[in-house]
Length: 101
Image (cartoon, rainbow, N blue to C red):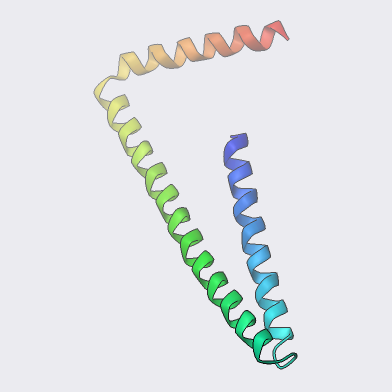
């Protein structure tokens, strides 16, 4: 759960950085010389590339999560009693660990 929250926070932070960088590039348009314009163009291209990669990673993560859910559902439907036993065992272990605190 903490890993998911960290991943989500990272995704939001990266999106914010990209948005702010785009805003900075657009706000500085027309200022500076030819080299500044070239640098601005390269930065905007890099930002677009980063956006595409971030979207691809996000889609891949969602797809993998959905596949894991489907696989889990199939296993539980195929092996209901084993699933109940596993869930009970995990619950017992968590109960013991939490009671020790």
